[in-house]
Image 1: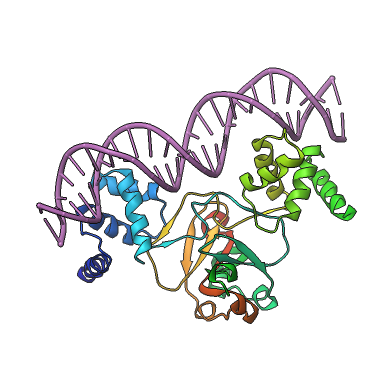
Image 2 (image 1 turned 60 degrees about the vertical axis):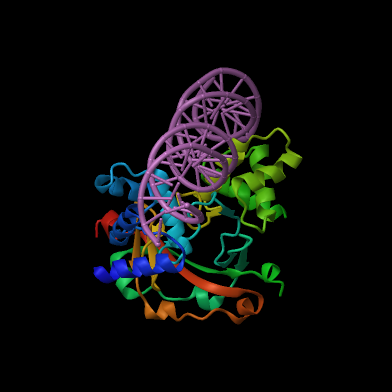
Length: 141
Length: 141
DNA sequence: CTCGGTGCAAAATGTTTGCAAGTAC
DNA sequence: GTACTTGCAAACATTTTGCACCGAG
């Protein structure tokens, strides 16, 4: 438990973020969350221990956390809805710099198995593989 | 070209959607799009050929298309941003009914290769695999 | 003391719903 | 003619920005 806070303090310090009571509470509550919460969901939980905290603080804190590697943002979430006219099997590469999404095909990817532990508990109907990085236009290759 | 419109008409007919000029134009413009457009992006293109079309029509049409399998919605897009406190390597299963996201681990998935054609053109820094379907709680398993 | 963080407020953006008039079937 | 669709408008939710005050370092 203590080591969690140590990690938190160290990571903040390395990145010039101050250790505030709000951030500490947000961090601990966030770590306990197993449901990949939205800002609003986490805000509601934190309000119970810190009734005066503002939504913005939670919002900006999670953003900060994602910038210093203490949190990951779930694929695509928070962006405007986007549609794909290609309903055949294919996969995506997303450039984190320009936001463009490129299609690619791969028979190997198409045929990747669903782990049996998953198949035992869930009816899997779709499999999406998304690669992320810098595209050739942004990297100037 | 004609067969595209045939597919479109057939699919609409099967699902009780009427063939309107707007839908036809939207469909054709959508199919030509290689950039996985947002509603707004597509709306702007369509406005050139149908200046009086409303944003809502494009919005609702894309939604209808996705419901009858003429379009796919890109992972997570359009939903509020969600954060993941687990920054270790892991993968996600998303229930399309309740929206919950479950983590799972798989060494095999961790070690899946990036296709060399992709590596030649892009600097890939992340690989995300998302399975979708119905979770055990929703299916009542 | 200084600079970044917090809380409040408002703006910008994106999503969703209601309804009257129009149109495909 | 009927039921679905369209266009307009308003409601709603989410994300983003500005600013004065506060507090960690």
